[in-house]
Length: 476
Ligand SMILES: Cc1cc2nc3c(=O)[nH]c(=O)nc-3n(C[C@H](O)[C@H](O)[C@H](O)COP(=O)(O)OP(=O)(O)OC[C@H]3O[C@@H](n4cnc5c(N)ncnc54)[C@H](O)[C@@H]3O)c2cc1C
Ligand code: SF4
Image (cartoon, rainbow, N blue to C red; front, side, top):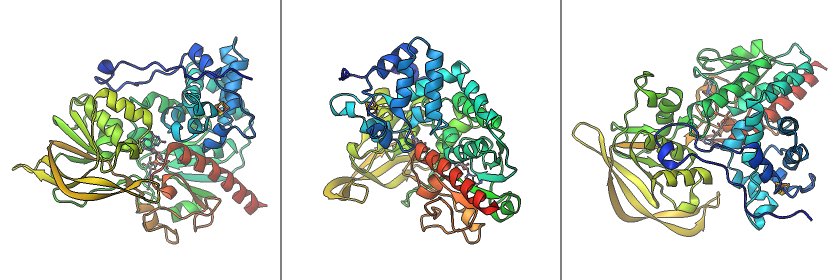
C-alpha cells in the first residue's frame, strides 16, 4: 500500500506587503524538488477509474503525468518532457490552466487523498511541468517533434475569436494539417486571458509564449478584425471550408437602478481592460488613464469581482466587495478569495444595490443597499434563494465596479442569417458543436454563457475533431 501523506507541499508565495504594491505574480510555483515531493503524495489510482481524470473537463491522464515525474527523479529534463507529452495529449495550454482552473471543483475536488487530507496539488504540478518546460526549451523541442508529423491537407478553416476556445481549436486543426486563420476583434489575442485576468494571476509573458507556439504551428492571427463589421460569416464561408465561432461572452450585464450613469461607475470589463490590456496602472508611461478613488466598491463575487478588487487595491484604494448572497455562495476560485482576504479586501454579504447616489458634479458618492436574507429553498444552480428584508444601508464611496456577469455579444448573429441563438444570446449547437449553419461550429462562452477556461478549451478541441470529421466526410 502506498504511504498516505495528508498535508500537501505548499507553494511559495510573495509576502502580502510586497505584492500589493505591484502587479507581479503572487504565487511562485513549485521548484523541481518541491514538485517531486508533492508528486510522491499521489496514490497512482488506475487510469480506468482515477477520479481526478474524471473530474478534469478534458480528462488529462493525471496519474500518468505525475508518474512521469516520479519515474525520472534523476533526470528532470526527461521527467518534464514525458509529463508534458502526456498533458499535451489533452490540453495545449497547461501553463494557463494550471494557474486559473478552479481545481477545487474539478480534478482536485475528486482526488481520493482529499477524502482524508489535502488533495494532491494537481494544478500546481501541471503548472510546474509547463513552466519548467518553457524555461528550459523543452516545450519547443516537443513542438518540433509534433511539427514533423504534420501533413498539410490544403483545406482552410477560419476561427473567430482568439480566446482559449479559438486558440485551442486553431492549434488542434493546425496539428491535423489545416490552414487556419484566426480573426480577432481586439489588437491583442488571448480573449479574457489578455484583457480580463490580471498579471498577478497570469503573467502576460506566459500568454505570449503560449501564443508563439501557434505561430510555429503555422496559425495566422488577424487582429483588429471584428467579424460582423470588418468581414461577415457569409463572406468568410466563400473563402473557408469551415468556421469555428469562439467569440466568448464579453458584453457586461449592468444594473438597471437609479444613478447607474454617474461618473466613477465602471463595468468590470472596462475597468480590467484598461488595467490589463491597456496597462493603465503604468499611466502616463502608457497613455490609457484609470481613475480610482479612495474607496472602491466592487459589486459581485465571482473571479471577475476578485480580479477587479485586487487590481483596485494595487492602485492604492480601500476596497469592499459587496455581494447579495453569503460567503459560501461566492463563485470565485478559493485561492483568489483567500488572496483577496490576505491583501485586505473587505467583504459585505447579503446586500443588494438599489441606488447609486451622486454628488453635485455627477460623480458617485455612495451606494444604497437593501439588506437581504437567505431562504431554505435553492435555485437551479443549488444556491440558496434570497429575499429583501426592507432594511437599507448606505455606504460612501467614490468608485464602483460592477461585476455581476457578462453575456455574448450579438453582433455575430445579427449579421449571420440562419444562425440559431437562444434568448440570452448563446449560440445553439448540436452534439458535435455544429451550429444551425452546416460547416459553422461554435464553442466556449459563446455557447455556454460565462463558464471556465478549461471548458472553452475542451470545446475548442472537440470542435476541431468534429470539423475534421465533417470535412473528411464532405470530400470522401
Ligand atoms: C475577469 C475574469 C476572470 C476570470 N477568471 C477565470 C478563472 O480564474 N478561471 C477560469 O476558468 N475562468 C475564468 N474566467 C472565465 C474564462 O475566462 C472564460 O470562460 C473563457 O475565457 C472563455 O473563453 P472563450 O474563448 O470562449 O472566450 P473569450 O476568452 O471571451 O474570448 C473571446 C475572444 O473573441 C473575441 N471576439 C468577440 N467577438 C468577436 C467578433 N465579432 N469578431 C472577432 N473577434 C471577436 C474577443 O475579443 C475575445 O478575444 C474569467 C473571466 C473573467 C472575465
Ligand atoms: S485521484 Fe489523487 S491520488 Fe488518485 S491518481 Fe488522481 S491525483 Fe493521484
